[in-house]
Structures are given as C-alpha cells and as structure tokens.
Image (cartoon, rainbow, N blue to C red; front, side):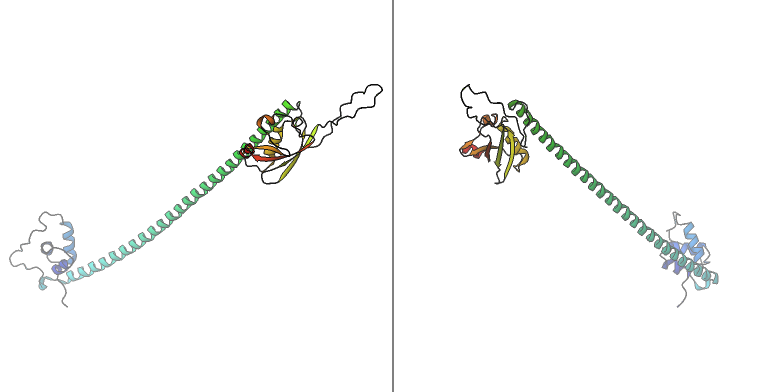
Length: 278
C-alpha cells in the first residue's frame, strides 16, 4: 500500500481541505509535523478556511515533493500520539482510582454520621424514659404523701390526734366507778378501743387491719386505696353485708365505734355506682 502524502494524512486526521492545503503549501511540503505546527499557529487566522489558490506550477501532495524527512516526521508524530494516548489512559485510570477512594471515604463518613445520629437518638430516648420514670415515681410519692396527710388530719380531727394503727396495742382500761355501799359490783360493759376490720376487695381477695375505735370510716377507705389493687382513680365506697348498709360520705366522717364497727367488722368494697344502686 502506498504511503499517504502529507495532505492525505491531514485529511485523514479530520482537518478541512482548505486548511490542509494551506498548511502543506506554507511549510513547503516538509512533512506532517511541520504542517501540524503551522495549523496550530494559524488556527485563528480569519482566512484559514478560505479556499487555497496555489501558484502556477505548484502541485500539492505529489509524490515527487514527499521527502524522506517528511516520512520521518510522520513516524515521530505517530510515536508522540501513542505516548500521549498512553499518558491519557494512565491519567484517566489514576483519576478513576482517586474517585473510587473519594467515594469510599464519603461512604464511611456518611455511615459514621448516621451511626452518631442513631446513638444520639438512642441516648435521648433513654434519658427521656429515665426522666418519665422519675417523674412518675415522684408523682406517685406525692399522692401517697397526700393520702397519708389526709389520713393523719382525719385521725387528729376525729380521734383526738391519735394516728391510725395497723398493729394491736394495749390501752389502759378506765377504772370502774365504785358501787354503792351495800351492793355488789354491777356488771361492767367492756370498752373496746380498737377495731379489727376485714375488707373484701373487688376481685374477691381480702385485707385485714386494726384501727382505733375513734378513727373515722374514711381512714379505712384511705387504707384500702393505699394497700389494694383497686385501679387508680376508681371511685368506690364501703358497705356492711350483714345487715346490709351502704356507707355514705357523711358516714365517712363518723368514728368506727359510732357506726357499730367495734370490736370487729367485715366490709365490702363496691363501685360507687353499684353501691348507690344497692
């Protein structure tokens, strides 16, 4: 296959014919390398794409004008192009490796950020739960304290200041009056200062406690609230099964002795609506 001339080589490389012809003519057809240099230097000339009119007798691209120097220039240009292409491929490969490293770094940083956010959320949730438990505990303690204060106030109001007791205590028996001279001692009625109360709850279970005879019935209700499984906020009342008697709010202020619940009694917890119906 015949070697391409400089003009043909330029056309193969994509240059326009007008430019290629001018480059060959202005470099004296000295080879592809010189023609390329000329094109680079004159690519912005305003008439670079004008048709080339060769002088008389000057033929471009002829085999007789192709010199050995031109052939050598083409060989060097091809070698230079191969080197540049290799460098470009190596640069692109290095850039691709760097992009992959950058992508992995960004992925690791994103994962760390997500993990930190998740840890912060878990810590915040744990703190909130601890705070809610503490607030609930304090709220329950306040309720218990209030019930205890109410119970103590009622005991002081209706029982002469004596606090309710859940343990049996021995009180001195008042001395009996002397009988008239010449008569035998009259039978004395035993005075009880305590009452043992058994309370049957809504679920059928029972609790037992000992109260002072002068404590109001409200003290028993408070004791049931604090020591039973009655749902919080459940409004209930007490009744005596035999004989059946539903205690009212007025009864709650009366001492156990006045209500006939001394020395012992059995009471039943009932929902307020049910007790009222009964």
